[in-house]
Length: 297
Image (cartoon, rainbow, N blue to C red; front, side):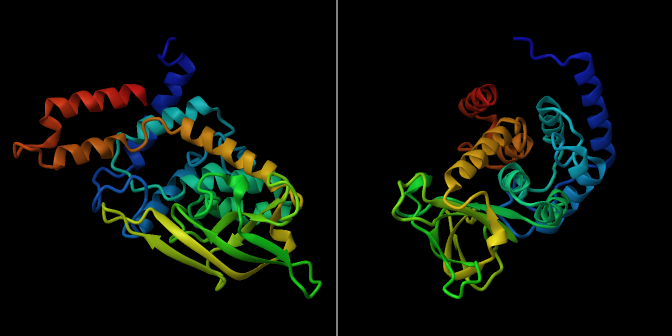
C-alpha cells in the first residue's frame, strides 16, 4: 500500500499547512489536555473551533450548506495530521461533531437541524452521548432508563433513570439519550432516542474523579425530565436503528482522527521525569513503545 499523498492530496496538505502556520497557536497555554477533560481551557477550545469553522476546517467532510467543505475523509485525516504538530487546545467537541450532531442531521426535522448544527460546528455548544448504564455497560440494548408518555396527554415524554461513563457531560449543553419506551417489546425493539437539554433541572451530572485528577467521565441522573415529542430522533421504539447510525458515525470519526493529540503526548513524555531523573522520553524502552504505538495507530 502506498501511503504517499497524491498530487491533489499534497496540494491540500500544503494549503492546510499554510493556514495552520498563519492561524494555529504557537505556544500552549496551561497543561496539555488533548481530550478536553478540564474546564480551564474551554474558552480557548471554543475560540479555536470557531476559527476552524470560519475557514471551513471544523468538519471538512460535512456538506457546505452545513458549514463543511464537502471534502473527503482523506482530507480530514490530512488536516488532523497537520494540526497535531501545533499546541492546539483540547477538543471537547469530538463526540458532538463525530456522533451526536450527525445523528441529529439524519433524524431531526429541518427546524431542529437549523437550530443546532451551526452552533455545534462553531464550538458554541457542546454535546454528549448518553448510552451506557450501570447495569449493562456497553450493552446499549439493555437500557433501563425509561421514557414514558406524560399523563396530561400533551404528547410529551418523562424520562427517569441513570447513565454512566458519559464523556464531557459536565461541559455539555445538549445530549442524545437512548431510553426504554416499550418494556414489553424485545429489547432491541422497545427503545427510542431523544435529544435533551443538559442544563434542565431534571438532569444531574456527577463527575467521576480519576487517578489522573481529571474527570473525563460522568454519571448522569434523570429525574422526571420532561421532553417534547419534537425532541424525538427517529420513530417511537426504533431507537436501536438510530443508535446504530450513531455508533457507525463514531467509528468514522475515530478512523479519521489519525495524528490528533500525538504532539501533546510526546510533549508530556519530554516534560515528565524518568527513573534516572532525566526526561522520560530518553528512556530507550519507552521510545520503542512509543514507536510501536505510533505505527499501530
